[in-house]
Amino acid sequence: MQKVCMTIAGLDPSGGAGIVADIKTFRAFDCFATVAITSITFQNTQGVFGAVHQSAETVRNQILPILDDFEVSAVKTGMLPTAEIITEVGKVAAEYSLKNFVIDPVVRSTSGYDLIDDDALRSLTMDLFPIALIVTPNIPEAERICRIRIQSIEDIKFAGKEILKLGPKSVLIKGGHIPLSKLPDDEVISVDENDTELKALDFLFFNDTLTIFASPYMRTQATHGTGCVLSSAITACIAKGADLRQAVLQAKKFVTNAIKTAPLMGKGYSPINV
Ligand code: PXL
Image 1 (tube, rainbow, N blue to C red):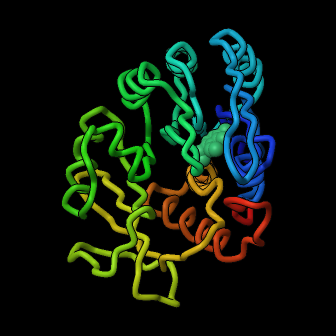
Image 2: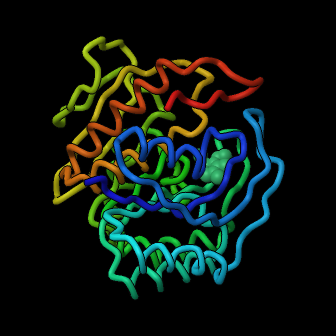
């Protein structure tokens, strides 16, 4: 039986990120995709030019009929632009005892557009992080959440522990923004056998253990949607019963391959190949 996943996220009409990327990813993992749109953004591979956000009510009204009807095995959130939407998602999650809750704390687009205001970020960390199975910030997001600069593996370890204190069961800090040539001493799981010098390292903090996932660092313009695809791949794997480490490993393999095989499209950051 196909598992049902839900994404609560923004619409990127150009198809590279947001709910379109999530739907394609759920499908690639043989899950059934359901969605609630939080915002309609205006963008292409070159930039984000604006957005019209939904209200708390319209987000709730999209989600409830689905939860009343389907057994939803896992839920992910992407762009949650306002505090009122976040509070509402928290209420719905409590009312329906939503489990397997994956939070991609989307803060800014690849091209540098702020997708969430400060009030919303506060509400995200206070109201939603405590119910998350996993939170998946990249380096700039972890910096904004912890209000620190991250320049080393020590900084990443500090940030991981700080974010864990906000209440999620686990944290995955995606290190792709700082290519590293030297691997740390901790356990490292290699995602690709064709290892290169530079690594993109992702750091999973879970159950008092740090697991580091290494993949070759790829210099490419094809990065649009990587965060959305990774978190929805994790969501799908969790829905299908994988444990957290397995889910992250499979999701990371999927994203690495999607970056590697992406055809260059548009004039800016190409969508990855889902
Ligand atoms: O990749 C972050 C992201 C998430 N969701 C939506 C987006 C973007 C980046 O542009 O547009 C809707």
